[in-house]
Image (cartoon, rainbow, N blue to C red):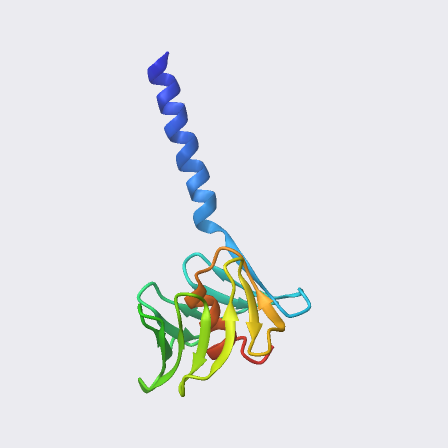
Length: 143
């Protein structure tokens, strides 16, 4: 009996972990409406579900055609396709442009704020570096 229970438990955990792998995190606008999503594999989609790019595990950011448009380094530095530093996302969530000026903030709860403190978007379950890159440097910086 304990052996069957153990097999059941492992099977259940595997099934639940597969559901988690396939989920996506919704990205919202300043009004809370859905503007897109980022899947756990890094695929970024707009509000209609169309793929607009991706953020790879190594920090490389690509557009919908697969061209490299930037990079998010482990230390939070954000670079464009030429390798020039265009900003930084600090560990505490502060987002700075290339000159070091604060342009926004990512709160622990996933709320994204501009330099004046106004909410411009948000999502739960995404690292601050990815959220900062999505909202301030790539894809959703005009929303």
